[in-house]
Length: 417
Image (cartoon, one colour):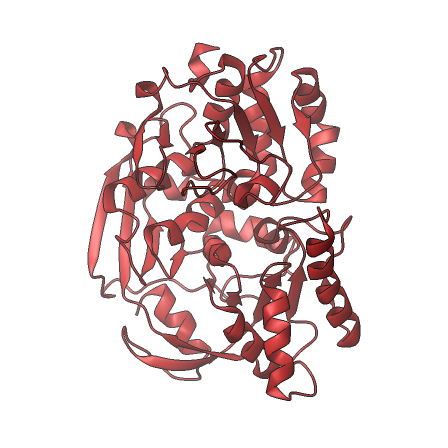
């Protein structure tokens, strides 16, 4: 079996499962946010359930429109707050304690290797980076999971992606996953498990692994996953709030396709409008002017991402024709960034620094684009109107390219600075 099949089998009580099989599995953690939880809560009440299955295994995180930008978003968040109080939900994270959900849960050790996690957010697949099966589901499925602690799945077929060779300077997990999506397309791994391995993955820090698994959904994947190793162990050992288990794929596990990439040939990569698969080397796009730069999100708002952006922009100024928004993904990341002087670097460069929020990534707030404007963002999607006006444009990159772009006023490379 693959690692995905092994985790699913363990949560069904069966010795084995196979691709295509319909199963009912127990859930270790259920997640929802201020957009999706209100729907789930409404559906939960319709079930007639008198209690949640486990108040310690439901995470409610208001992060999309927070701090609440208007009356409607305030009402959305109040639904979460009231439900959490009514059912004594332990994992409700209010402003000041919250972070962007997919950065917060691994950081806090609330998702651990071997877990089965469902979330009413498509980027729940992020947690595959620590060796968990994690996938996004609809709000009604989350409602059922909150009531029963179970969810149904079709066991996905698996694709294997092998990355060999040494990464070029500044190239990171963001560039690898953009390159991969550019190769196979936004439906290239439709409803499949995307298993990442190889020399480059083995040497990649957890931050890069989380970025890669975060964007598995952008290739249509049901989940992204990386077999846990020593890097995983060091990351989870000091964080894990409960026991965990490492699973790895069998040598004779079945894959519908195996893709191999020579990382020495992968350049700094940018996804152009309006699909994450519309990728080009950043070096080919240096004539494109940019109005706004966003560094943050559940894809690239971690401490390592902010360090990278700060290294590029230190001692320089944001171009007068550009506004730059930096969003640490959690409060801990914010605090550590202050201790390391990263916040000073950004503010001295005339960027603005925000409290943790999804904000501009989904066109929520804190950086909406006007008609005709272009943004370079370290986020995960660049669909039409994703960050504001339907006639605006979003380009996706890693933190180094984003920071260089902020200084140059056009898509740029860190080497230029």
